[in-house]
Amino acid sequence: MWSLKSWQGRFLPHPLPSQERLRHYASWCDAVEGNTTFYATPTRETVASWARQTDPDFRFVIKLPKVVTHERRLTDVDEPLRVFLDAIEPLGPRTHALWIQLPGSFGPTDVPTLARFLRQLPTSHRYAVEVRHPAFFDDPHAAELLEAALTPVSAEWIPFDTTAFFRTPPTSDAERDAWTKKPRMPLRSRALTDRPIVRYLGRDDQARTVEGWQHWVGVTAGWLREGRSPTVFVHTPDNADAPMLARRFHDEVRARVPELETLPEPIPAEPLTLF
Image: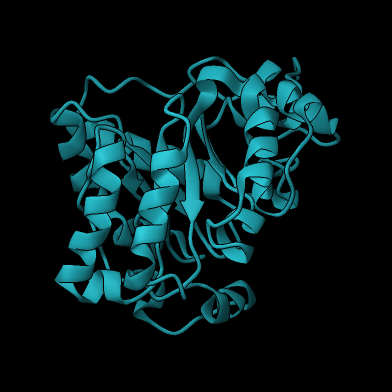
């Protein structure tokens, strides 16, 4: 989430206690994907430490556990969902959205299950759904079914844009690994709510990553002018430069929407000296 080894000594001081890493990451970016919660629900004490390291307006987009979304496919999940919601409670307003990432096999015929699940969720949270079944992108009727399930509960549809990544063959070990694992998702730019969320995957080459996100710079600027509050996550296969790239993306959007607030000043990765 915020402790990538390649960031240590560049974006985060090294050595740095694990309980301090999020605070330093939050000086670079004002949002984070909570991906580790997919694999295990953290303790309340751990989540409370996340809250202590961030300001109340910092954004967590927290992924629901795989036992809920992948293993039980949103059915008979009252107990693991209760445990999860209790664990993340210390985040308070920092929980920008709960991220429901569904497996690629979760298709249009499963939408009634999703709709039922969403209706039963507490209204104290916002929700965002990421689907990976091709029909939702290729079949307008399937897309309409999904939007009809999301709209009544003000849930967002998260696009995962991998078009720039899959445009040309991989050229590094990290890209070759991602080539076999990442989904080939068609481009989708439609927002359903006032809080759209985008996940963008570029390349390890910075220039190609920047070239590939130009579409999202325009879309994000447009959302801001409409009064929406978008959150954009920038990834590359190795994520080595992700914090710096995220800030560059923010700068490009702000060049089009000058009233957009600046990001915080990063905490230096190395102590300042006089010489």
